[in-house]
Image (cartoon, rainbow over all chains, first blue to last red):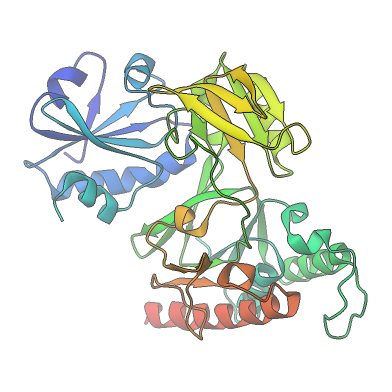
Length: 103
Length: 271
C-alpha cells in the first residue's frame, strides 16, 4: 500500500509505533496534489520500514490544530509518537528521505 | 503538459517564450501580473536598441502581446513552489499545479529580508499564499501584509471565505514583527500590536531557492553557466535573477539563450 489514511480514531496508535511520516493535506490545495505522487512513491520504496501516511485537515481539523499545522502541505516525521522533524511546503523525494534520515 | 514552464512574465521570460515558440515548443508563462515587473515601473527606457525613450509599460505590453501572438500561454498567478517530478517538473501556482518538461526561471529580483518571526512561524501562522492556506483560517483574525499588487485580491478572497482581515499596504506600516508560541498570536506593525492567528505575507515573488529547493545561488543570484543552465538539470534562468546589470537588453538576450539551451535539453531528453 502506497500510503495509510489517518483519522482521529487511528492517528495516535499509528504514530505511536516506529517511524511515521504524515502528509497533512486537503483537496483544495494545489501543492498537495503535487506532493501526492511523491508520497506514494516514498510509501512503496520504504514499505515495511517506515509508515507513510496522510491526514486530511478538512476531515480532521482537531489533529491539525493539535500540531499547529496551519499551512499545507506540512510534512511531519514522528518516532514512537514524538515529533522529530517537520517541513512546510512541497518536498521532493530527496528531502523526504533526508527528513527520515534514510539517505 | 507544456514543454517548458517559464516563471516570470518580464522581458527575460517573454523573450524565452518567444524563442521556444519559434522552435516549435509549447510554453506556459506564469506571471503575477505585469505591474509586478520592474520594467512596468520604468517611465522611460533610453537604451533599448531601436526604441529610444519607450515607456517601460509600453515595451512590456508589446513584448507580452508578441509572445501571446506566437502562441505562448499566459497563466496569471504566483508560483509558490517547484520541484523535479518524474521526468519533468511540477510547479505550484496558487491552488493549482502545472507539469513541465523543463523550467525557465525569470523571477526578477526580490527585495528585502524576512521579517522577525517570519521563518520561525512559517506554516504555523505565517503563509505566503492566501488561496493555498486561506481555508485553514476560516472565521479567524488574520493580517495581510500586501507587498505586491495581487495582494488586495487575495485579501478579498480571505474575506469571502469568512476570515476577518486586517490589511496592511506599503503606506500603512514599514516595520513588522511576528510573535507567537506554538502558532502565531500577534503581529507588531510599527510598534502597534494586532492580535491575529495568521499573517499572510504577499510579495511579488519568493526567493529562488525557496521556490526550488536545492537551487544553487551565488551572491543572492541564481548561479548559471554560459548556456544559462542552473545547478539542477532541466532548469534554466535568465534576467535580473541571474545578477546585474538589471537591464532589459541583458534580460532579453539571456532569455533567448536560456530558451535555446532548454530546446537542446528537451530534444536530448526525447531521444
